Image (cartoon, rainbow, N blue to C red; front, side, top):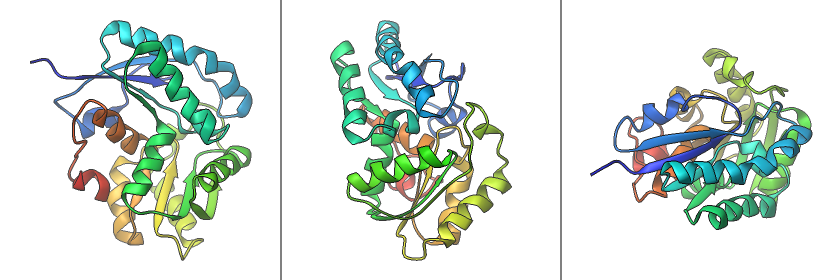
Length: 236
């Protein structure tokens, strides 16, 4: 029997995210369509919104059985209702189950009972502040939020693991009462850092790309379990 197929709508990259194969090396097939996002700014997001549904329709024609819209900031920047409308528009256009990266991180935080958050992002201040508003509107308490100031697509992937580890640790230290740590930006390579962060900080960690992929494969009826990659992924 063929593997179930998850379609990924991505901001710009032309290859399947490597985290997909690291988490799910077998049992799932991935397809990809990009919308050509140039920058992680409101103007950048506005310029590609109209490309999302056509990308979803292209994935459906290729055989996708569920669709994940990747790009945390692309989906949270106008608030929860807008994020929901993006997933709804994909469902209406394709007839397929769909979710977004922002919905995935929210679901993940709720699964690990995270409410008081330390939030580390790749973004500039405006986009980081928009994430704070998004999370607050959904009932979370953001104890601290700080971004790396990145705007161009692709820059996040160039951040070294040691630099990313140290940045996130400093954000955590600014929020001594937090009960979960959120690392936001699908371009940040966090997969191998989740366990070290959880061990050091003593709280669950949710990160955009790994936990969005978890949510996406669950749309296919799979558990999403990926032992060795943190509390939520190991326990699924």
